[in-house]
Each structure stands twice: as C-alpha cells, then as structure tokens.
Amino acid sequence: MHYATGGDLLVAVLRELGIDTVFGIVSVHNLPLVEAVDRELRFVPVRHEATAVNAADAYGRARGSLGCALTSTGTGAGNAAGSLVEALSAGTSVLHVTGQVEAEFLGSGRGFIHETKDQLGMLRAVSTYAETVTSNDSAGRILRDAARAALTDPGGPASVEWPVDLQYAAQMDTAPTIAEAEQHTTTALPGKPAPALAPTAAPASEPAPAAEAKDQPSGALQSLAPTENRQAPGRPGITTQAHPAPAPPELASAQALLASAERPLVWAGGGATRARVELAELLHATGAGLLSSNSGRGAVPEDHPQVIGNFATTPAARALLADADLLLTVGTHFRSNETADYGLALPEAHIQIDIDAAALGRVYPARHALHGHAPHVLAALLPHARRADESWTRRVAAVREDVRATLHDNIGPQAAICDAIRAALPREAVVARDVTIPSSSWGNRLLEMYDPRDNVFPRGGGIGQGLGMGIGAALARPDSPTVVLAGDGGLAVHLGELLTLAQERPRLTLIVFNDGGYGVLRNMQDRYSERRSGVDLATPDFELLAQACGLAYARIAAEEDARPVISHAVGSDGPTLVEVDLTRLGPMKNPFTPPVKIPGQ
Image 1 (cartoon, rainbow, N blue to C red):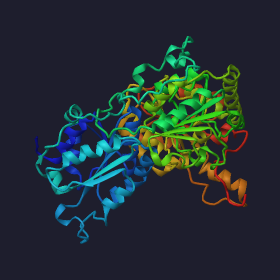
Image 2: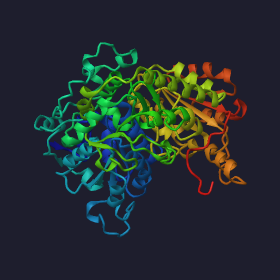
Image 3: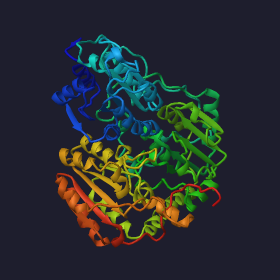
Image 4: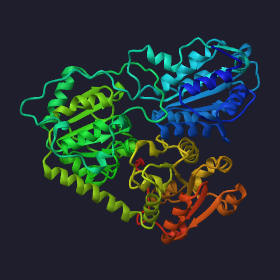
C-alpha cells in the first residue's frame, strides 16, 4: 500500500487499532504526523508532553485498549519519559510516536536542533519496546510491532522514533494489516479464548464444579456478563505471543490445595482484571473473601458482599489473613505501599498466579507458583473449588463492612464528598485520582469501583498526572461524566492543562482539594520532624483562575455543600472546577500519613 506521507500511514494504522483520538504537541519534527491526525482523526493539543502520554495512557485504560501520544524529539521526548515510566509501572498500553532529526544527521552529535544523545537508549529504558524508523518501507511494520508489544501482557508503553525527513517521504507499506495478521495467526489474541489447559480430574470427594452449583450468583455477580472477559470496546484484535501455561504437576498440586481449603482468601492485582468472569465464578464457588491491590479494584464489582477490597493492611483484614488457610493471589506486584513496606504477614499456603515469571515468589514465597495467563489458570482451578465454611463467608462480609465504616468515620467531613461523588455518578464512570490525601486515604478504597476501566490513577505514585489522565479518559468515553480528584500541589505541576480542559470541554469535574501545599509530606514532617521544609506553597485564587480559563467554578466549604455542588457539576455538559476549601471544611479525625517507613522512627 502506498501513502503520500508518514502521517497518512500513521492514520491508517491508528484506524486499524481502533484509535480515534491522539494527544500531543506539534513540533517541526512531527508536523507531517500531527497534520494528518488532525485532518483525519482528533488531535488534542495538550500543553506538555508528559500530559500527552498520561492522557493517551488513560484513554487506553478507560476503553480497555490502546492510546497514542505524539511528541517531538530531544527535550520533547525527554518530557514524556516520566509518564512513560508510569505506563511501564502500570503495564498499560501506550503507543508513543516521537519525532527525530533527519536520518542523515541521526547520531552524528553535531548539534542539530532538538538533537539529543542516544534518544533511543532513553526510550528503551522507559518503554517495553522502542525502535527507530530507518526507511520509508519499514514504518508500517514498526508501528504494528510497537502496538503488538504494548498490548501483549503484562503490557507497557511502546515508543517509535521517526526521523522527520522520513515522515515527509512517500511510504510503501508491505506489512500485514492488523486484520490480515489476525487471520493468519494461530496464537491467542488479547481477551480471546486460548486453548484450555490440560484438564486434571477432580477427586471424587470434591463438590461439583462451580457451574453446577445450585445457588445462584448475587446481583453483583450477575452484573458481570459472560462477554466481560472478551475484548473491551475499541480494543483491537492484535496478535500476541502464545500465553505460558503452568507445569502440570504444579497445577495439580495447586488444584488439590484449593480443594482442601476451608478458609480461603483471594487477592486480585492488575492482572486479575483480565479474568473478571473466572474470578467472580471462583468467589461464588468458594465463598472466599476478595482483597485487592489498587490496580485490581473493580475486577469484581466492589458492592459484592465478598469483596473486602484495598484494605489488606487494616487490623480486621490482617486478622482475616492470619486465620486464612489459603491465599490465592492473581496478578499482583505486592507493592510496598499496599503491604506495609512488605511487613504484612501472608498465609504460608499461598498460590500465586502471574504471567510475569519474574514476579512469582519475588516478594512473598509461593507454595505453588503458577506461570500463566490469569483467565486460563483460574479456569483450570475452578472445577476443584469447594465451598468454604459458611461462618468464614459471614466473617468476610463482616470485615468488609467493618473496614469501610471505620474509614468512613476516620475521614471526618470528607466522607460527605466521597458519598456525594458516588451518588452523582452513574455506575459506569471514570474517577481519575492524582496522588493526594483524599485519593490515598479514601479515593483508592472507600469510593466504590465496579469496572477496572473506571479505576484510573498513577500506579507508580507520581504526582501531577491526574488531570491529564482525566482528560484522556473523558475523551475516550464522552457519553459518561468523568471526575478527577487532585490536590492543589499536584495540580500545579501541570496547571497549563486547565487550558486543554477549557479548549476540549469534556464532561469532566475537577475536584481540587486545597490545603496550600503538599499535605501528605506536611503531615509526615509534622509527625517526624521539628520543622517543615518545602511543603507550604503559594496557591492561586481558583475562582479567578477558572474564570480566566473560561471554566465553570464552584466551592465546597462545608459538608452540606458537597451533594448539591457535586451533583450539579457532574450533571453539566462541560468541565467544572470544584474547589474544596479544606481549612473551612475541617480536618480528618486522624491526619493521613503515607504507609512508608522512616529509618530510625
């Protein structure tokens, strides 16, 4: 296939991938790409390259697919690197296309404008795949290879650098299209069934498989239609490598351990979101309680009575872990902030499932380490599931209620805001959360999630990414409202994106919790130090700022303000900046400090 420019080829590949919106900043080194995208698709001119990647990342998360960012070379690509680190940490699918100097001068070190030393090496350090377009007949193959790498579990960003003279050149694309490659492959596709693992006969003493159980699933389970585990809307059917399968003896031992469990718990990480149906069936078959990492939230809707959620380090959940006779973990990294800096005690009877072989036993020992794709491995375990003691399932439900009631009480007047957000939003709506006290304390736990595509946040923990993520998610799903939780300190990192918000006008409610600085670190210093350093910041007048940007504005200064203000903002057709005056609202019962250790304390 012939294309007049590289931009025309890029548009064709993006259409194959189901991408209709691209985020970026125009430059002399990506002009042919931006012009073609802006002409044929939707180009969103963000104000910083880091935001371009954050927005593309969240666009992909919210759709269950792939997002695309366009940046310039040198400093522009460097600006994008931090957000690529986030996508790499989260295992989210981003296609990052950046410009490069003319091929003739590439790597010459002569100081060509925007040139940087070993840009490809930098991109390889922060991407799961990175490559350079070297000719006008290689771009189509490289773009599709990059998309394939980004969409292959465990995922991550893929970067392509493209010399500007080759962008302007006519293109010869001989690589198979996405559809053509799918027709000629025998490997598994993302979200599509793969050949079943070899069955292992269940012992005669075991109960009937979950599918034959007499009890019907609860309403929350019924809401998971069988198609939920297939391709999400907009996700391309792009080929990947065949998924690994656990060794048969190890699988058989895990099946026997599951069959003997009377007090089971399950822990869902980000990898569990690929296995929603199987995970829900496992809970129904066993009566087990479900803990989750932040990344695993929504794998089973959080209003299900067996979902404890992201509360593993609470006293009640620790006691439950201490009494469990089996823990089955699915696709979790056991991050330090979710395991009390690895001080959380887990049961010795531990079955760990992960598609990343390096993750197995890396943080906690696993009695049975199952290297494989979560839907396939859980499907192989399901026929061996047995029902837990009913007193255990009742205790799980009680712990679920206890941890939520305790947190709801501890956050004081902010509970009214949490309740108002959930009441105003439809069941399926994105809540994008920057790193701020409200997000870390209750947004990541108490504010219920029913679908993992609604659960958008910086998994690597970097501040300032929330608004960009919210913009990407809102434009990915324009028919439903999006809410962003941000602090005044984090918002200031990319304050210019308020102009992107004003220009694109998505259905987005930006809730800014204003405490005049970095509240998390301020609380740490107040607790452990004799003085504050670098945490008290100048804060703009947000009402004037919103007015200058052409944004609607509202303010919450008391609990009774929360419901009417948030309901009106979420119900509007465009963006609204809602300022929460934390000084007027009043403090939490206990100041929030992050779950990190201070040496010597």
